[in-house]
Image (cartoon, rainbow, N blue to C red; front, top):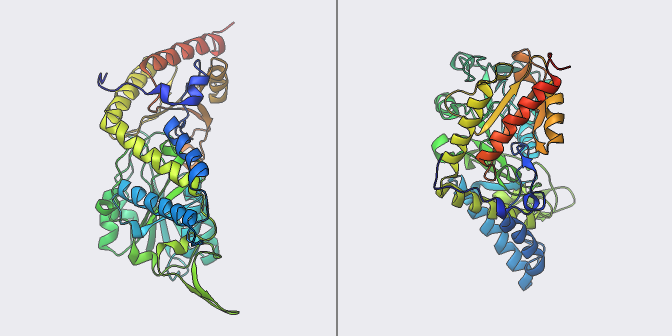
Length: 404
């Protein structure tokens, strides 16, 4: 175990108020450190005003805060600040992209996804496909390795768009998206990257990926709900219409027309959630500090301890994740339903998630209906991992086929 990293449990107020809780559902949403909560409150007590509107001092201060946050978020993913917008969620951003892509669709054009996509990166494309009579194609996920199947052969002359997750929200497998982007760029095919499951555990570099868009939600990286960071390459967004129109995205309005602003702010109509945005970039800075102290290696070692323990229990089956993965582990028991295991763990104050995890395609392709997912985070300890394994043993004794 990495000795240099100490889980900063004391920095999380909810966990301090619930010392018996073992929170292992961070892939759904992370707990929030005090520094982030303080940033949220500080905004309302010192800088609260509408941005890009008022000429008064407080309005200018709020605008400066938002634009500084944009710069921090952009640096976090190594993007130009001029190409980064704030959205309300990854789901909202993907829906907006699907409806406003600068693509002239023809019947029979193809969109390439993977079987590992979250529903948020499937349903918008299904709707678009129905509107334009497009074809959705899916890269399979190997049931043995957990990696992507042969994706190169699925890219052809009819492929007009690729939208893929960087990491599976069920297995934690990190996919070779950089290779996908490289081949797509050779064929002038735009690529959208859903980084919601990767942001908390993987360094993001949109320049190296050379993708056309990338999005993640702040609450997956110790930030607050209601904020997503959306990168769009300038070669793309300058040809796009706003997802939503209204105040803040126009230079001039007449009775019958409007002239849009020539900046990324055209994708931020209305009053932004400045307090949550400011708090979320505080979370990104906090996360970078934790990574510098050894968080990434710590979580990978902790994950390996968990996987080793699960594999020592022959009544449990662990889903494959390949060599590169986030600290997420999913498993199931053929004799005990995933929901029963999750309820048992909840009774022991262990929070995990059971079900299809909004990624039904992957489980369907593997003939599974539900699995238990354990997702580790900065506040997870080695002692908690061992405690969970003990609770699973007790669950088997209570719920397994030999239980009286």
